[in-house]
Image 1 (cartoon, one colour):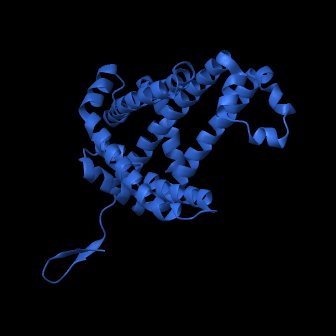
Image 2: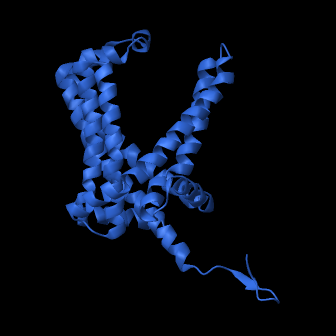
Length: 277
């Protein structure tokens, strides 16, 4: 299922070019935030990021709806985006609110630790966000491809993951490999294109590197380097974002179709009542 879903997703990227709109929107958000942070500061960049992130569920719903209907037209994409926008947005908002509330409550005992506060904070953040991401990743797919409501789509994602834990772990491993390969290529291209600007880093000692901040890196690469970084980030998220969304939809659809085709196992008792194993 993992490899066959990946092959199907790659095929959809060729036969349904409209799916690339979601990746283009994701890449645009990242590039805009980088450029706005450099030219306008964190205040402007943060507000622009929030505004654009609110619009992303529209493109996500459009891609999932187009895959569900098998329609690659722009009209179908935008129609599905309008129809399923809130079905995608509202569960994501509930999940984020629950995750941050859980994280806040879990941080209270961690904040009481003094010397080990940083290590405890990292463990708490990982221990809260990873399970939330693992069990709720298919919420949008359930909302669009199975017409689920807000809380029902969250429940369906958890149920889907629990029933196919092994296959889901392999699916996430494949996604990590895809993103890791993309990050490696992006980092390689970034270092080649900014070789001259990054040359001073090779002459720094360990103490200087430890004190090096992101603001120092921004000043080192300059405006040209920021534009190159934004362009690379745009290409990376456009390609990886488009593939990951299509891959997740194909994986979810294949498993649900296989489950629907498998007859339930059980038997009738002497009174004619059905008992499922």
